[in-house]
Image: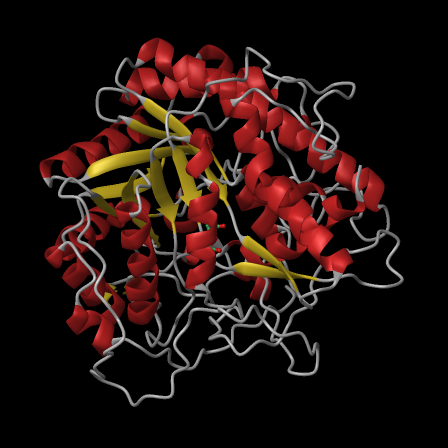
Amino acid sequence: MTSGAYRWSWGVALALGVGCGCGADDDDGAPPADAGVDSGDEADGAVPDAGWQPPPPFPADFLWGAATAPVQIEGGLTASDWWQWEQTGHVSRCETTADGPDSWNRWAEDLDAAEAMGLNAYRLGIDWSRLYPTREDWDQDTPDAAAVARYHEMLASMHARGIEPMVTLQHFSLPIWLSDPCDLAGHPGWLDPAIADLFAEWARRAATEFGDEVDLWITINEPLVYALGASFQDMQPPGARYSGVAEPELAFGDVIATTKAMIYAHAAAYDAIHDVDGTALVSIATHNRSFEPAHPGNPQEAEGAAALQYGLNLLFLNAVTAGDLDLNLDRDTADEGEGQGIPELADRLDFIGLNYYSHTLVTVIEGFPLPGFPLFEPFDTPLPKTDLSWDVFPEGFRIVLEELRPYDLPVYITENGIADSGDVMRSTFLVDHLDVLARAIAAGLDVRGYFHWSLIDNFEWVSGFCPRFGLYRVDPATGDRVETEGARTYASIIAAGAVTRALHDRFRTYGAPTRCASETCATPAAECPE
Ligand code: BGC
């Protein structure tokens, strides 16, 4: 195990929505010189940018989408481990999914929003605990009939509107009967030795039921982000068995065990879906970041950045494409428990689902038992910041896209978005990131679709409702879906099939973020029984 492996956590702290309220005194490190973001000196409005050449248009059959996840929008998922998690005090300000956009009942309004923007694709989740709320339901294979009917209704409506579904089978949540924050030993979720078989069976049943309506499947969303969030950071149910700070070796062991379980579960689910659905295309959604040393030229930081890039971005992809399993991240698959070309893992990816948000500056924290473990240390950089203090860094999008080229697989951007409650950054974010994407396609990368995160404002995990990622604002009082300027900009890009000069010139600057800090939950709704 290399020390660099522990540096994973920095990126993931950001990925999970931890607001840092970045202080300016944290660091003297500069971001990479080619940061690629407009300095914002110009006045608002159309400022001709003579030095900019428009990228070629997107392919005519490109999928233009947006993405959501069941826990984040549906409401009422009381048999899900996330419900238990939020009820027992793990969410900022004690916020609960019960107060969310209620998409389980208002889904047609969501699809109205998608249609209004001209989307021809939508990534949504089908929730395991919704269909099988109890172990008995699961064992007897008696899914909730009303829930099955509701999902069919949504999918039929999408097809009627010319919107192609992409379905996620696991987006950070599991049924409580598998993953219980109040009984971690009894129901340890992804650390349950039976999980790969159970997950493959879930995939088989979902594909059997919905395969006629769905061709694009995501088995697992952001496996590494989940593994670190659950087993190291204690930010995901069922929670960490060991403290990442006090017992990092043990906690990291669980991260690896979870990752391994997810690799095998994905491969088995891939086979199960293909068994029952001949036209299925199956992948994961991997959260990839660009990693740079916080202080260019610092060799320890450079080593940490390279280790993170390998572990977070490539480990899972290497396992389910080449069958190479390198669980101690030493770039050698010959160690015990590892392997090269493992037949039951290899060739289990029909495309790559890529989630991109930002980059990570890697540092080394002296005195921490594991060197180079920058858990929450923020850096002040001159780059524009989102409401969660993440850097806006379109150049990183180019870097992670290029990193996928050797896999020689089609790519769908399964998530890309920004916390922007003021609606003062999303338009520029879209223009900048889609500019990068169009150029990557023109340079030969086979990217077939883009799903913006997110269609509507939703429950941002431990950060609750403060971060607003929606193209459509959800009015907290009425639940009404309200179009943002970002939505109009996205619609314009879709209508043009391109990032046009007019859009580029109009959206060249980022407005100021509305900082979104986390607060502890002082009075949880429930406590775990003694
Ligand atoms: C997750 C989403 C999340 C988004 C913004 C991704 O890591 O898949 O569920 O809301 O990032 O943090």
